[in-house]
Length: 68
Ligand SMILES: [Zn+2]
Image (cartoon, rainbow, N blue to C red; front, top):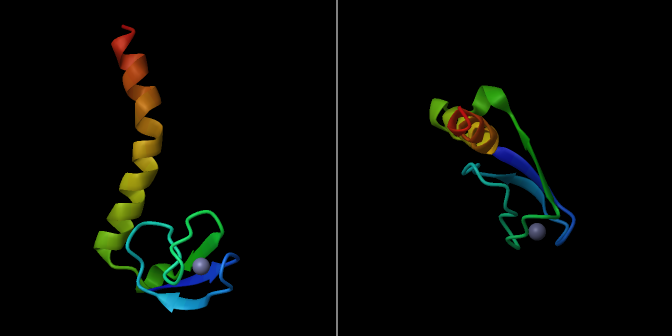
């Protein structure tokens, strides 16, 4: 579970966290904030976040590798 706060539709409540930052009410991805309670997170959720974080830094790493 995570707490979502959306400025697009004024949603403020808890909903399941699926690894993507999307308002559970209106579907906004730009006006929504989420607060994750790490003690409530499953290992799968933690892995999804870590994967998303590493995917953001991967392109730079692979580009550097190809230059050698
Ligand atoms: Zn919303």
